[in-house]
Amino acid sequence: MIGWLRHHKHALAAALRRLGAQALATCLTALAMGVAISLPSGLYLGLENLSRVAGELPAQPEISLFLDTGASAGQKQAIAARLRQPDIAQARFVPKDEALAALSASQDLTDITAGLMENPLPDAWVVRPRDASRASLVQLSGSLGKLSGVADTHLDSQWAERLQAALAIGRTVVWVLGGLFAIALIAISGNAIRAQVLARRDEILVSRLIGATDRHIRRPFLYLGALQGLFGGLAAGGVLAVAGTILREPVEHLATLYGSTFHLLPPDGAEIAAVLGLSALFGWLGAWLSVTRSLHRVETARWNH
Amino acid sequence: MISFNQVTKRYPGGHEALSSVSLTIEQGELLFLSGHSGAGKSTLLKLIAAIERPTSGVVSVSGQNISRLPRRAVPYLRRNIGLVFQDHKLLFDRSVIDNVVLPLDIAGLDRRESLKRARAVIDKVGLLNREKANPVSLSGGEQQRLCIARALVSRPALLLADEPTGNLDAGYAADIMAMFRDFHQVGTTLVIATHDERAITALGGRTLHLDHGKIEEISA
Image (cartoon, rainbow over the protein chains, first blue to last red):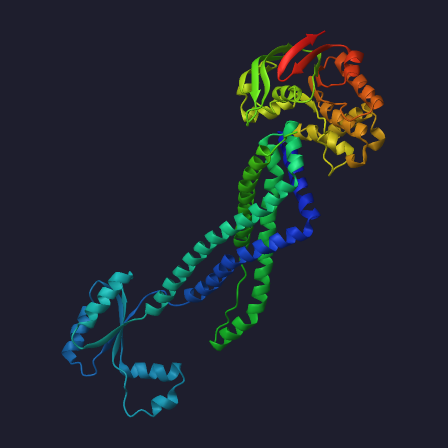
């Protein structure tokens, strides 16, 4: 057990020494990895921020029911009766005068509405259905639209839903990109480690001759790969921090134009830990693949004296 | 301790380095392998250390059948064998003492204990004043002694030496052979491949003469 720990301590120390001895190569590899990692994680961060905006929108879907301006009293009563049925959670009648008053007050359009000869707005119902699923919303909206005296229906949640759907696609893209760049990470790490294995060919052959196990020979290279991946993750953090600093001001400016106090949020601790952990894992994986392959090569091309 | 039973080694390409060799080496024995180059001396040593596997026949070391030894067991076999190479196989990216300490690092020994043992064995081969030097700066004889120190530091029961005095002048060669005699006297089994007849007569012991992969004669 103590011998095992000592082996790991030695391997880690050796890996750090090698990275330090080739500081420039280490930095370049870390930078290449950092750029690869920062693309999917940057997109993820952007989406998270966008989702936050979308999350502030009304989540409860509503159906607006606009009545025909010429709807008869009987038609209006039939509609009101329909809206008292159990599939409707809540229905609120908005008379056209109230709608006009609300419009002039809220949008500061008093000048325009004051100039109107007559109220162009229809009477309306704002309906909150009991079942908020997409299919039943569409169905209910359709059946309400067919009632006589109803001019038009409008699903208020539509654009929010479209945004959610777009965000869902965005998240899928993050996963796909993440997968691709994980492969890139494995390749970068594997390539760096392959060079290291070839550079240490003599040491590997001699170690093998004096009783080193495969695991003993592999261990420092695996640490090397994992550390290189970790540095790549840190470099990605740096890239994203710079990008965030550059973007903060324009984004906040845009938000003020919309009357919002929105600002970019940095990733939280768990997200940072996940990115660093995954980078180290993929670095390790690349090293493992590369060192296993290269060791085999080094061994088959061995002593021929 | 070591036995060969009808061992044949044929290399890819068809060259037969050993043909139906049978022999037994007792524990604590000092055995010389002689014969001109290409006679199969190196191959015989490589078979004992499982660097090569026999094409047919059985090689057994300390009761283990080397022909059937799984790959993962080979390192543990080698930890009990000290190997001295004609071309030394030293690592030039580290100091003399770090070369010697390598087998102990591999075995997972405590670093301080390792350094202590490495220093003791470096002292024995007469290189203590060069412990911090890079092996590149050592003479051929010093490099050979360093290689011997590395082979001995893990106190193996068996020492295999391939032309240990091959490139050395007579004075150095005699020094190294004297060291081998000392190890033999403390009970180490030694198998030394050499064509240095003077060394063989100086140390005594059994000599196995190989010719074209066959045992020609055994003289005591």
